[in-house]
Image (cartoon, rainbow, N blue to C red; front, side, top):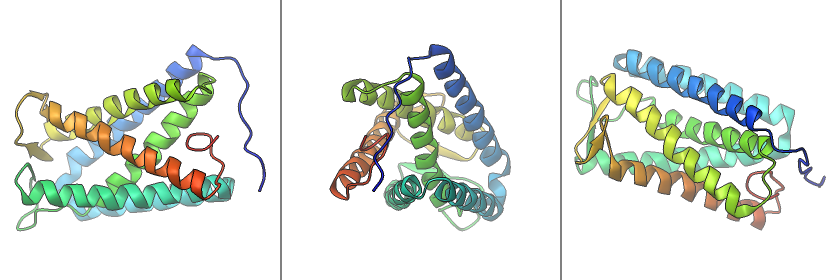
Length: 209
């Protein structure tokens, strides 16, 4: 197994800003796309599925070792995300709209799967841009990213009529409890991926440098 190359470049705040800016645009486009076309949820699901497949395929061809890690995290995030959604819908904590007699959108599993690939690449590029090697610093950056970006995506889609939360203390439609749970979910997936990568001896810049 080839050794993992650790980036030794100096921190670049400018590069980090570019990474954040690029990903803000991505989350805005994704949220707006889902929000505007959520009434055609089967087609939204098809588009997300194709995009996910192409993204995973390209990543695997570029670097099979990293592709294996990303595929594992994608399946883990998608599966656990669906379980959380079924729980929340069943107990009436939130409700998706414009689905006719259904309660569960077709696009939802792919959105949770893509959330992992999005956050993984965001964290990886920020770690490289800031030349982070300290684990505590990495976790601080990761926690900040999983607080800001998923919440922003939810704000966009909620205000475009995709769904409604029924918890109190909301910020633009997103409850404080939901923000906390999003942080717990994505940080938990990262922790599980760290355990998997270390157990399986999979070198990875984010989970097992």
